[in-house]
Image (cartoon, rainbow, N blue to C red; front, side, top):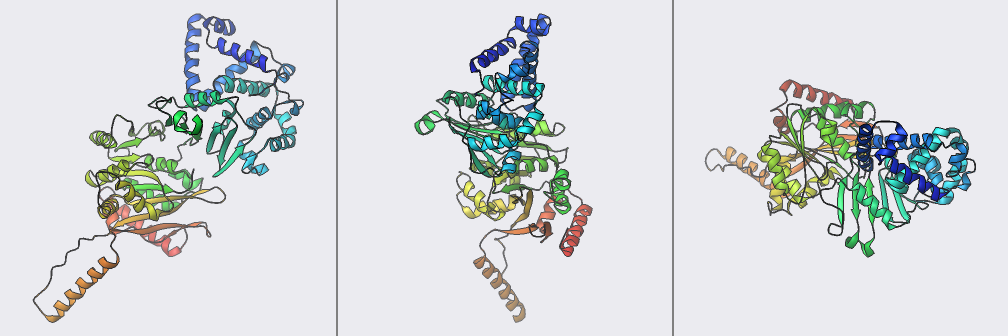
Length: 548
């Protein structure tokens, strides 16, 4: 961070860090005994790691400690702070400092919307925004707030992510670094190049890459030049460098999930993502151990969040097994009362071995955080067919009508399948529903459709009738001809049944076609007939009303 009086700033940063790492200095400042000081320093060391891994509340605690030290030890008043950050004449500051001023009192999403920022955000635009917000800045920044901003700069410089540190906790979906002079963010699917943000050198980027990938099974280094991991707050970190990039460039991408525990009830009552019909259907599906994929084509459409909400509706008496790449779902933390275990993909165990472990631990329902590998699909479908396990996953798909094709293509890359027709048939028999999400122009996320994948029996056998009345012989011949024509025209072993569709013009969900008898027969093993009948009646009423 390019504050004023940089040498003095660096000196204070170093001294504060020493205080919080030195028992004697800590004792003198806080007037505590040695044992207490040692405990606090040890705790602080753990806090630094947690804050680097996205724990917002821990970061806030560390910054608050810096504020206390700045007050008690350095006795900084308004004039003292102005040596580093000029709140009187904003133009006396570096643009990065002014940008941070704005971020502390406004979310970046609010700034983007209010000032229609698009594609490239220049230094000139930031100065215009600062001038427009100058009265608000001076109104909001009292002495405590000024000290906090200085503390934020100290933290970002010593332990944080430098110029992008604050952005990680704002309402955007991604932060990216291409080189020391190119930082971008993603908001509502649009990439914005923040031209005024830059790092001092490549070492700062490397430091950010290393500290944010501490949760990874492998270390990020020359022998492992690409890495995908996650922070404690579920944000996904993807880094690349060394010999994996052109000219040894260092790339960084932080996909900000911050997966909150949003329930289906909240999606219905607060966010208008679903309505009562969708809610009743999905909760019944979970009670019936129905298999489901959550899909969507837009980035940041909320597939993982929706999958978690579905997971919450799995009956508590069942065991849930999750296969994930970096524990992005963090289901155990979100649902501590549930019987949930998560296995992380690693180079020492095949995906098949991990599935076997989960099933030997009596998992009734199995989830994959995000389908990216052929073996994940094959094992998931296999679990559904052989072991009567309910399954769920997220998958990128343009529409729900490409799901079988996409899954088939993945399955054909495994040793388990060498016939595409067999792969499609297994998918149709093993997978029940596709819940497809979409993002509207106003940013609202909705369930765009719920589609059933119906299995179409291709092995129907009709015994030939060679004796009897001519009428019966003719009837049997016509029946055989119909089946022959059907198989000739439609050779697939599945068909899509659109159950519920969102109507964008009416802003409503339309009940189109009821689920198949086979679907109700499957979930009927766990859902009583009365509940199924009540849903069928409710669905019929909704369909007749044409609006819910």
